[in-house]
Length: 201
Image (tube, rainbow, N blue to C red; front, side, top):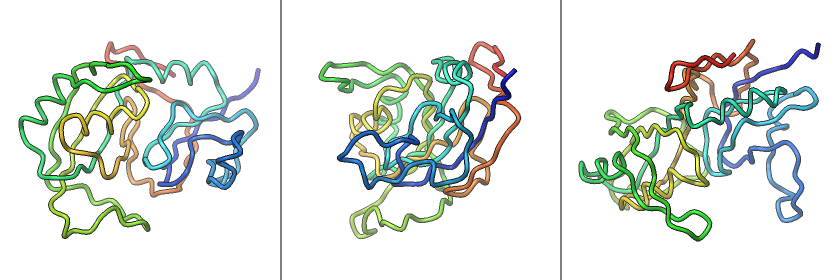
């Protein structure tokens, strides 16, 4: 029986969530394979955009990949937004906002949103997001089950507070913890509880 391998990584800013670059226009992009030596058949479970950071799970087991992507699995993001976020905006995000998906309007599902105060202490990016003179920023925790393309960024923009920086900090009960950008750790399996208390391992 084939022994599968599973990893937690902290995907850095500027990396694609893939191991093979099959698009000529992305020839010079950074890929996950640069972060370590991985076995054949390795794949990312879900994706983080090139300009997003944080927890990404890797596996050689396609079945586990399909299960973890389920809407029953919570994904938590820490999001830095432009401006001093209002209670009204938070309520709007919690109840659902209208975003565009492939040219059609989509109403996001209700989710959990809270303001992070104090702000999380992540290492500053080499590429500065913006100058402090441009005004205040806020940090939010947003917990969703679904995962539409660039969903969290579209949600905060729809609420009037565009995303400046986005990090995924949790998938189910797996946390980013103290993994630093670019770090990889192999784990025995992914024990992830769904919102219906089902356990995947």
